[in-house]
Image (cartoon, rainbow, N blue to C red):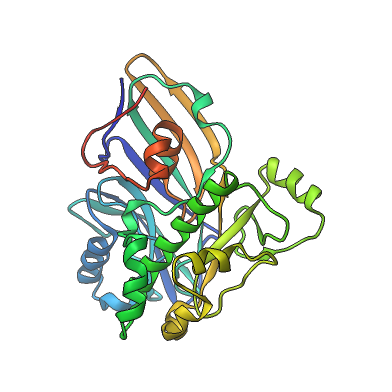
Length: 318
């Protein structure tokens, strides 16, 4: 039997930024170790200790409360503290930098996961669908059209929930069409890059895709969405009673973006005995380790977007 329950003992994650603090500047970067505390609660506790308003403490990404995590925060200061600590967290290192942290500064997250039972590495070979995980609290696709039709005052949080739901639904729609394989006219993205590109040499693109260098992208729908040369995304919207104009009321709060459809775990290692399997791997920022687990061990459930509550013990099918 193979099972997993997310706890700080079984789930560890650490952030890796695109850059290191320069050692000078008007902001302080702090690298914190935390356990059984959310990023929001960590920021509140740090705010109280250093006397900096909460809205001036920035993060690059959210980290699960039920985890052992290491993550960066920043705040305006030319003073580097020697120690910040409290229940469930402590400062590991700090340095100055010219600019504050913001979303998108994370290059990748490195995970260590303990699973009860014996697994082989073959279960994790190849890429997996880069779906948003249950942590995004997404509405169902059947709710999205009604939400867009009725809501007038949009918040970025609600918009991001709808965007995540539509992305997941589109990827699964493409998966049912042809296993979400690349198609001529796709917009592509390099691993660890935010820029998309297109190319008419489909044979070369497929070679690079199969080598794990690039992935076709899917839409984070919004007011300034970039669409590929084919009409798959417009067809998907039309089949669900939506159109490109459906997102106009979001204005600047939901401009839209592109997201890779496929992700390859990096630096993957697996150690297993009869009782436990230890996984270690890295994922680009925004990809979900729990989605990788479901893809490898409970794919049918993932393809139904039926996410288990991993805070409770989940038994994977044989």
